[in-house]
Length: 206
Ligand SMILES: O=C1O[C@H](COP(=O)(O)O)[C@@H](O)[C@H](O)[C@H]1O
Image (cartoon, rainbow, N blue to C red):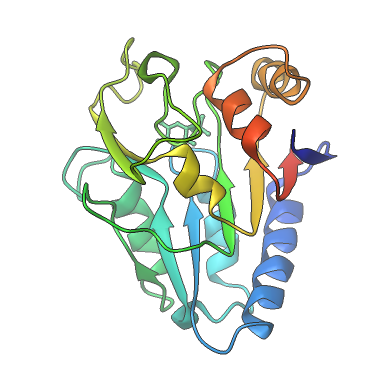
């Protein structure tokens, strides 16, 4: 089971400051490029807004969206399109997910979580496995989330766990309860499957 460091009442400014220091340290420790994976949805975008104007040298970072809705990049629901519009102008290389992608080891895997316990686009109905042989899957959530009712493409649990650190940003009491129960091994939702297989540090901003 993962060793989770929980930081409560963290606002976007504090989370962005932590991520900035983490990425600066990763860049200092690397001779070349690093890769990170980041979430979509709504929670991370005010944090990206802060990070894009930070001291981070984005030209050395490959940014992999951890999941996406299967829509064109100029669609309002596209995670990749929104991430690209913020981070490409400051030099990041955005790597859209494709079914045959071979994701690298990530310096950081940043994730959100839905109130149903989904992480990336690994929804409960898709029965994600910690030993999935594939790094990327396309799938259909059931039920379809009303705010984004689309087929999905996503990194799998092993691809997310191929990372030096995991960080979550969890907002709202309902999500917090699901996350805490997962960390305590009280259910088997996708978040619990990831945490129970995680050997690296896990930071959770709630
Ligand atoms: O559909 C998605 O949902 C989750 C959670 O999003 P949030 O807006 O509730 O934080 C997100 O992590 C994932 O990337 C996204 O595609």
